[in-house]
Length: 76
Image (cartoon, rainbow, N blue to C red; front, side):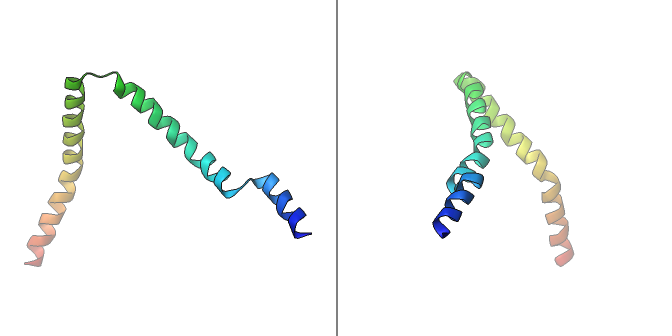
């Protein structure tokens, strides 16, 4: 009896691994698209992209670093 119920539920909802795969497939597709786009870049263009990413990260963290410095000064 339990076996029939279990099989029915599995057919309706799928297995855990099937649900996991379904959940990550959109992310995998985005990664494949980005890889294809970056694969076409030359070495120099990739270096420029790396610098651009580092700069974007540094700009994003600038406000946080300022807040940390301010809190450290208040703590002293």
